Image (cartoon, rainbow, N blue to C red; front, top):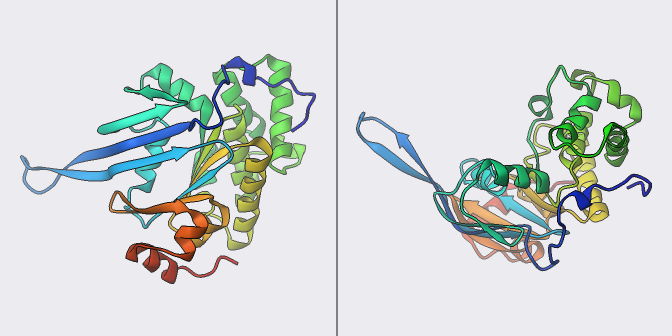
Length: 279
């Protein structure tokens, strides 16, 4: 990152000890009430069941599981979009009991999201420059000159030319749009990025480029990352720690090499045997 741009990290206290997780879920449950059949019978669906995870700066947590395993609901809890039914969330070492507007605003600065499909995540009528400046405007970061400099810095950071700033999303390729989405997620210098299936909407040839970009950014910016995917080989490529989810529960977790080279759970073995090699 260019040294001459003023950092706005000082705009919020950054006293987080390296050992303290940025986000931590402790025994978190998310229960939805689904009305099925009878008008009076409400069925309780356990989307997330007794989940405990920690996300630290400089480390990638991979969350893998099939559709319906609870991984996306867990991601929503991590980024403040879904309140847990039960359990504790700790955010920068502090217990958060309710996601008030103030808490969500703070979470939004420190934990950023990259969604699955950049075509739907970006406003089709908003030029790239405005899409990248939007978080800076919303959070009132710096003055106009700082915001313009930061926007130029962001496109360089994700490997796009400055000419992309004047483009509309429809004028870019899928891979370029996902780079814009990643740049926007980085706008507020977050501690953690949650990437929910960030390569599944892309061509195979582009996937490796985006995975490598995320790995480079993690190293360069000392980011914590949560990488969510149904593809265990993609998760292997980027993760330090892996959590395997089935039916809302964590069935196996640990260092990536241990989980993937010596899986202890039958479900993990099934995922591994069903997945083609990434490259």
